[in-house]
Length: 193
Image 1 (tube, rainbow, N blue to C red):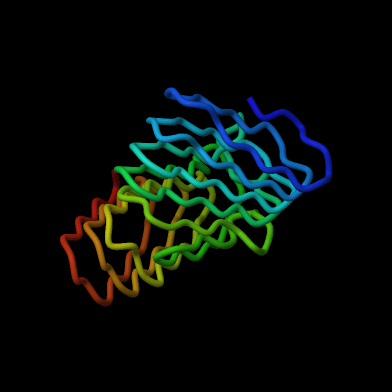
Image 2 (image 1 turned 30 degrees about the vertical axis):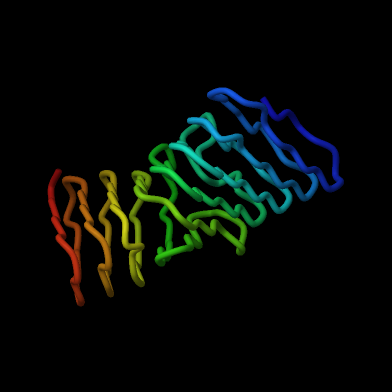
């Protein structure tokens, strides 16, 4: 567990073994290097720039506070899967606000986060779950791995400008609008899910 750390630069390197890390809050610029095993990281709140490197093996990262929102990402969160088969889940499913967000092949902005948002690199799987408000989500482009996006029960508008990797979109059971422009990989859209 990384508790509420002090407002100064921290460099943390985990030990060998399969680690389970929960980040409750970051108050000073922090870099975390995981060891060369299968690690699990839960990121609940950050208030200062945070960089995490998965390094080797198969790592799982989840961004969500205990209410299942990403509203507590209040500084740049920079996550790197690095080697192995790595999964990043960004879970805002508990959010009832009406949100606007923009997803690119390596960033997510908006959705009540700080302006810097989330940057991500070298992940094989990306899962994004939005909340139950009326969402306006623009997907500028996706990464070349697998992307799975689920919107909840608001009246959502999703615009997909370009798909670069296998992508699945599931919308809720309201009157949602999905616009798809360029597809370069297998894409599945489920509406009224």
